[in-house]
Image (cartoon, rainbow, N blue to C red; front, side):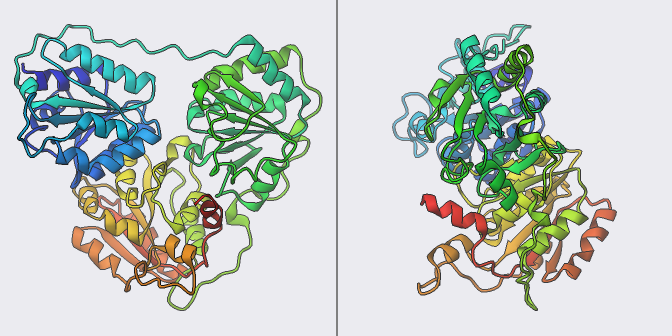
Length: 542
């Protein structure tokens, strides 16, 4: 066994869920070793796609994914996907080859550690045959326990070195979740007792804490909302408001902004989730619960910060409330009046003879597609429509790779998410710009037999820029001739529809009934919405 084989075998035994890769000479052996250890491997068409697939898989699975790349250019090709994962605190491992130690003339030579750190990832490396196992275990612990994206550089000379035998036991102890202090628990319980209209907003850090937060909300009289990345966490709860922030329906925004207590659970309470602070009333008490002390108050002033795991904090606060109950029903004095879903809002239909209103398109797709779905979102003016109109069954049904705000990540996101949740119908909402930017990965979806619904909100433009800069400016650099995306998709081996009206969606039902083993690309020619509601909110931060 050489070091490359040791690294792949060790990670396979430690527990990783999937490998995504574009294989070159530098990562060939370590990728094969992972496969030999029983880890499924998906080969992408571009390292950027492989990186985002790994990110999405890790978000939607209980096990971290691995990305492997060639040295130098393989890593730089993956940089945007790695940056997105790092900014999102995705527990993910990047195994990248590196030039041999001491090499100064290789064209592949870059400062890989510096690149990783600049993206927000943790830079690690395998230093020698003697330290290889310790190096891998350390990196794995960092990724899983600290929820970090870790880039491990594997120098070619170290990879080729003879490796010692692996021990039988490679178990890695998980860090103990952080329990809040008794004083902090009592302060939060007191704030809840004093509140008449409490609202809980759960973020990425609260995924997995749904039952505990629901129980506490019932005892607190609190309404429940999520940030976009935790969408679905409270699906089916009678007092759930959906997404807080730019995607909020008018009724949701009204209820959150009227709260006298807002508690963020593993939630940054940033400008996107709180609409630049407009969803927090001037007299509201603001509390933030997070496992990292430095996250408390990082995005806005807060009245109380609690360092603790969301689930454990909710359990302890509930115990405090049961010992000394609050009075009144809080924000739950009566059932919610009016729908909190955009689907039920009356909006003008801006459809034309040749283009469909994106709201009408999204409503009809929500009705046609199975409820057991996993929705992934690319970035662009369109993105609020699939995010707000397509319901998801739970927090594992929505994958939102938007921390870096890069367009073009959606298709790879949908593939990675689908492989993490194979029992659900994968659905992608993307714009024509982002889809065409990443279209090489449509071949990947076809090759692996993925029954993926790709909804292209096609306005023949980079719509966000069109609506941001508006009339009176030269928009020729952000508008394009109409592209027949359906024909291009068929060339890749996918099924395809061109949609200009709701009647054109009839083919979706036929495709669903055919037990499909290839994607369906819906080239939806959408009418101009004049700039979506969420875009007006988003560009306030630019």
